[in-house]
Amino acid sequence: MSTAANRVAPVIAGFDVGKVREEFPSLKQLVHGKPLVYLDNAATTQKPQLVIDAITHFYQEDCSNIHRGVHLLSERATKAYEDARLAVQKFINAADPAEVIFVRGTTEAINLVAHSYGRTHVQGGDEVLISAMEHHSNIVPWQILCEERGARLRVVPMNGRGELLLDEYEKLLTPRTKLVAVSHVSNALGTVNPVRQIIAAAHEHGIPVLVDGAQAVPHLQVDVQELDCDFYAFSGHKMLGPYGIGVLFGRADLLEAMPPFLTGGSMIEVVRMEGSTFLPPPQRFEPGVPAVAQAAGLAAAVDYLTALGMGNVAAHEESLTAHALDGLREIRGVRILGPDTTKDRGGAVSFEVEGVHPHDVGQVLDELGIAVRTGHHCAWPLHRALGVQASTRASFYVYNTHDEVAALADGIRYAQRFFGTG
Amino acid sequence: MQLESMYQDIILDHYRNPHHKGLRDPFDTEVHHVNPVCGDEVTLRVTLKDVGGEAVVEDVSYDTLGCSISQASASVMSDLVIGKPVGEAMTISQAFLELMQSKGEVRRVEPDEDVLEDAMAFAGVSKYPARIKCALLGWMAWKDATARAMEGTQ
Image (cartoon, each protein chain N blue to C red):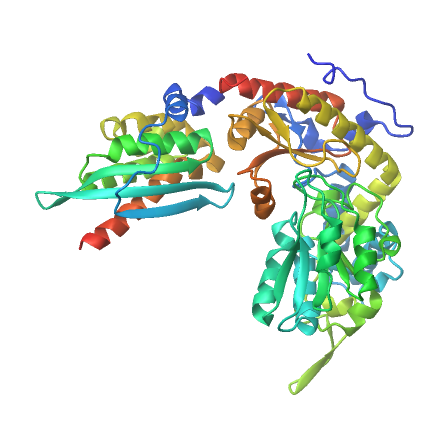
């Protein structure tokens, strides 16, 4: 056993990973006869019992459409939904609850901005600026918008360590630039981008910034007012909440001026056959019957993370990530992608194993009960930029332990022996 | 260990020492197929020849970027189809597709070992839904390239 594998878990005051694990029923299962080691948290997270209970409670007690009937169940459902909005508002420190729009997830949030804000502000000859490390969800909506408008998609390059080149970024900010869309934390490299600096530079040119926070909100204390971002998108299921709900934060003055994206019931003021008028935000952007049970589940997740303390969450993950970086570095033939220290780095660690394809690494790890992601992690252009076909990604969260990090390192060595490369 | 049921020795041998690998000239058609789930790629060329009025697979050459399953499968495929009449090679391709769709219940589809030869080793892969596309990548590319080559000859 290596020295890194034998690391003693540092103590974080007020944070007990053993207690945290007890809250997660899915972590108690065996996979192929081995205890589950779930290291695919950048894809989705497991759910604590209290989130599952909140969803069940809604269906058992409060199941009703919101903002409609005068009956008691509808009142309770409306309260659950609007309380969830308040919980999220507080969690990301938005100035006003109307700045919190519930959507299906990060993808829908970005599409909403591309369709609504994008179509009204991006014209032929204009430019939209993204970065080389974006997830497909923060590439494709802008590609389509640019194709439709005759605009140009520009890309901020990065260096071999997976850091954006800020000098190049500033050169790309011109009067043609109508929007900057950039990830807060890279889902493939773990890089924490200097978004505050990126936003400040764009604002000097009067350019609004959308931040893809899908990999940030679950892991760091995010304060949208401190960041001074214009739009901020994230998903519930990556932060212990349910599938099917996510959030678009938008600055009130921008949202006020934006036309609707998806339309229909719940978002209208008056409908006449000659034409309709729309409600103010957030209702303008929440057509149809919203995901109320999921909102209740998300609120429970927010409460749980708040109780753990986002500082503790970040400290625990940093300690696991440091362990993983050290442990993987010790393995001959393993190359880590992205930043090689925990400075400005989140808990997603992608790597290549020389001579063993990621699919095969993942298959062997699965046999050992270890769940990781393999492939291009929906960041295909990023992999191309790094000259990598595909990679294996381990990503950590509140319930992971140092023993699990050691199991990952052992599993990689086992895969190397299995394929005769170690 | 379940692993050995997927990674049969035959598969690992073909992975380590792939047959007919590398792109060769001349060729009739070339295709490029991608597995969008993982980004694995294959570029594959087919050369047909006319033998007494029947189209025969003269050569299959390929370059793959992918996992052991996709690389080994392309190697086994090239062994099985090179030198065969196109009609017979298509029958083998269909038998392999059925084997991959058997969900591990090989007895259900009763594959013909005389037809599939080394490709029988992939029976274990059919139990892993995420890996079936890996095993089929080279075969689908061959089928596509051959169909195009046949169109060219008609």
